[in-house]
Amino acid sequence: MYRLLRISFLDFKYTLKNKALLSTILFTVTYTFIFFIYLSNSTIDKNHNTYYQVFNDISFYIFLIIPAVSFSKEYSFKTSRIIYTGVFSEYQVFIYKVVSTCLFILTLGIFHRVIGNVFWGLDQGDYSIEILSYLIGKTLYIYGFTGLFTISLAFFFTLIFYNRLGTVIFTVAIFILERFLRGILLIIMNSELIVEVVKHNPLAIVQNALQYGSLTIMDGFILIVITFVLNATSLIIIRRKAVD
Image (tube, rainbow, N blue to C red):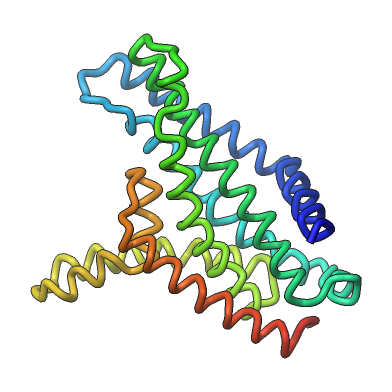
């Protein structure tokens, strides 16, 4: 178990050193700062979620792409042949990848909320610890549930495509397409039951939870159930075909 956690942490640190990731995060902070300047000189109503939501405009794609890259890169770079024939079993490789990616997701969640709080504090002229740490616990809860689902979905796509680019494109595209189709369905549907199903499909739950910083217990339960199904299916696939 210790070795598994250690390699998960090493994989997590490797992700944090990615120059493309760091550049994107810097751009996202700059983007939020520009909105801060704009909103500071406007009469638009603001609240504690204002800058959190602005930061989410770009950070949402980081949230999707890192899980999509985490596992799929092993197949694209053919390193899967090494890690599957090493000291870890197929299941252990899957678990350490989930853990390392989840560590990143939770770190991103903390950073997301803190950045939103910092700009909100600047806006209010309040630099207290209470402002800076506002809703961090709730954000971790949201990122935990939505992150586990997104990781399981991206890893499932990896085992379909066995390719990094294909996994990234499909993971991002399915969320974008879902938002488009959901908008159309909510306009044309008359059935309240169907409307509720459309609103609470897992892809919509993830997008809305991250955008608005809110996740109900029922939506969290939906994500956990589907996460379990996706992971169980992925493990079956890995067992049958560990190396492409």
